[in-house]
Length: 229
Image (cartoon, rainbow, N blue to C red):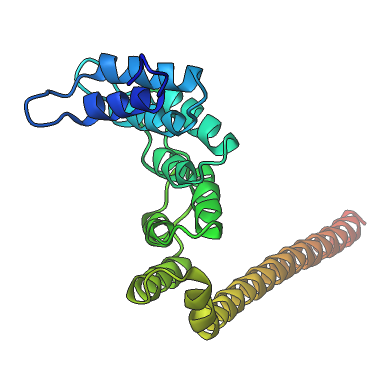
């Protein structure tokens, strides 16, 4: 087929060697080679699969997070939105040569959700439940995304419908979260006011003590002069 000009076979050969098949073992370098040839002739699907190959590794090809990221980004630029979720996953859990990064994982998962990837809802729940470098755990957000994921799965993945159904819960959770932040802020303000007042009280006590000391010295001085007379 390749000889006849059907370059789609290059991509399919890459898939074949990446995954293996009955009677054909997985072969990372051959998969890599065919994917790269497919990219050279304009088959942008292979960009995503090269990202997957370097993300997971394969016999003869070691996992390389930096290379995976590079090809996922190229895939996104070429319009392959599947790579948004994979970039989120890559930054969520990290990979050889690429450290875990919570904010970046969050950003890519949210972009994946925006283009209809319901699985990213679950991973956002997981991300907020446990946190990641640069991103603290957040129970309300975790629960919100887990519930959205459940609803989306039950309804076959309509994320917009899931969000509409979850809107009251989300609003309540966000209101409770804001109320807790306001409560903490008021407590901090009250603590600062108490600390400032304690400083003032100590300063006043020191001033009074100093005044009493001066008066005692003054009385002692008068008594001393009287005794000398």
